[in-house]
Length: 118
Image (cartoon, rainbow, N blue to C red; front, top):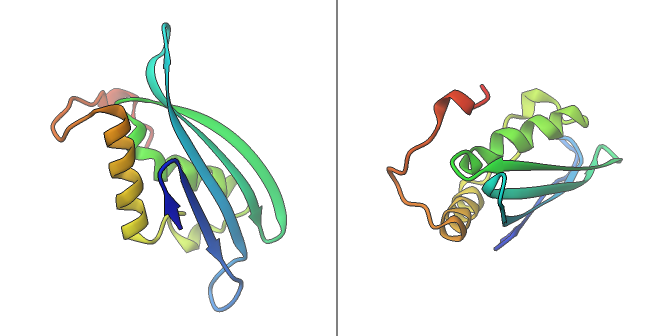
């Protein structure tokens, strides 16, 4: 489920699926030193194990949020075979567009590829 600033991810255990309930919240922040960035907070449970973690992404890298969120979820128990944490493209696209609007960015804006994490 997506609403601006928040995506809730749920999966019930079953065939090839883990029990997952994760809230991914985000907001744009401005800092004199960091510049404009997106602050993310994740909390929830994976197979009944609770976790909470926060991370920041610079403006030009914030669109790679699904990769960082997946890495964090895997650190807390999400099995890699289940793929990316955000599987429903409609919700991912909505979150991507919301972040873009909040940052005031446009297709073709420069990205510092040297800072991207594989």
